[in-house]
Amino acid sequence: MKTKGDHWFEWEREATVHPILMCMEAWMEPIKKAYGRSWPTAIMIYSGNIIGWYDPLDELVDYGKYCIDLFVEPEKQQELAKEISSEASGLESMFSKFGQTNLSQVNDQKLLEFYEELHQKWISWFVPGGLVEPVGYMGEKLIMEFLSEVPQADKNNFFALLTTTTVESFSKRELFDLLKIAVAKKEGKDVSSLLAAHAKKYYWTHNNYFSTEILDENFFEKELDLALLKYPDPAGQIQKMKNELTETASKKADLIKKLNLSAYNKNLIHLLDYFAFYQDYRKEYTMRMLHYLDEILGEIGRRKNYSLKEMKYTLAREIPLVLWGSFDKNLARERMKRCLFYFNSKTGKLEDGVGEWSIKKEKEIFHSLVHTDEVLEVSGMIANKGFVRGRAHVTMSVSEAKNLKAGEILITSMTTPDFVTAIKKAAAIVTNEGGILCHAAVISREFGIPCIVGTKLATKIFKTGDLLEVDGELGLVRKIKG
Image 1 (tube, rainbow, N blue to C red):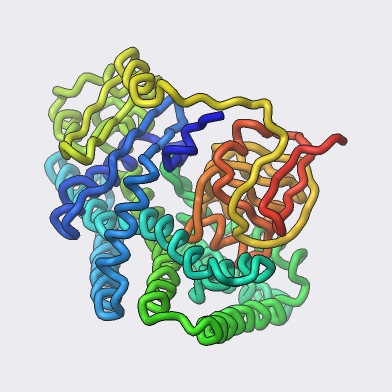
Image 2: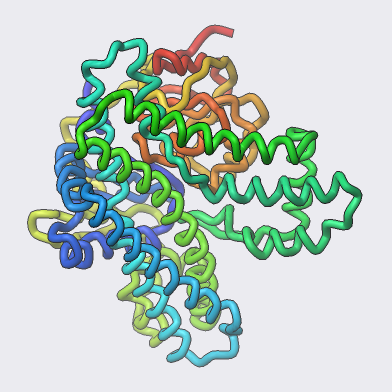
């Protein structure tokens, strides 16, 4: 049986065209100018609200090795960290300015300038952001290589520890902050002002490439109640979480010493630790940018009689045309049905089209690859150990994932931070794609949830309601009767 997953990295999610194509824009000429090579060949296929993003695995792995060689030395890692920190500071300044601006009061030219500023900041943010997935995939292979002599009984445990970040995610920080409010509430204090500040700080945490929303005090008040049910001793839980971070860092350092690793491999582990953090850091600022992107696109659409969704199926270069009234709205509507974008890394060119052209192009690329649904068991990489049984909840939609019931097994292509509401209720996580730096791997360890990533086919062969076993000791997910 051949599948796309045998040959291609695949990312499948709900998403609109506009933000995704800005990422691709960053990974063409700008990333080549910064680091010497553009991203691997990429195919983006939109069918309705779902995007399938594909990169040839051999190109992705080769690019990952190239990127690791660029940044494996400690001084290069420090330079990269400074670059990323500088970009984040620039974003903070932009957020502050936008947050103080009433977009409805500015003229079209100023609105375009705001859009162009956000567009440029997005490109700059995603230039180093384009290193994450390739470094993760190649780093995973390199670690498995130097663990090849380790007894099989220890290999999975060693791999999991070496690839666990020692820096907390923003999802964990949000929980820390919420638990601090829970402590105050248990002490009988009025926490309304604390919840208001919490909402101001974390209003963006459900944003994604398909939709955005502003989470208010009422939302976080309900989250606070749920946190108190789950953690009746919030102060104790805070201390437990702090201890876990310290213990992980200590165990990781001890293991590195025990393995007597070369300087290169020590540097590699440090690089992957940083990138596991950076994966989350990149998403945090992206989710905040998505808020302002929707605000600006929405205001342009309001003035020019476009819905926000229609605006999100335009491209960056088309925004001036929309404002000056020379863009064909039908093109955005056709993209909403079906479209394909094809970046050829050899030529550096990006092709795009809709309708029949996109169907023919997809067949041309994937003509020999098929998949079957006559499979009852899949295997993947163990991101976090454990064994559970539960009903499957299969979804590509963040908004639909919120309907997941406590104890169900979340099955999706890849998770992102906007899935955290569902993840907190899940008995386990299973993904088609992902490696050591993927969100599912990082967050499952933080929340202690069994997780298997990189199964390639899970969303295609399992259906919502199927009774499954997730075996986090062997890396297997199997359908069982019941």
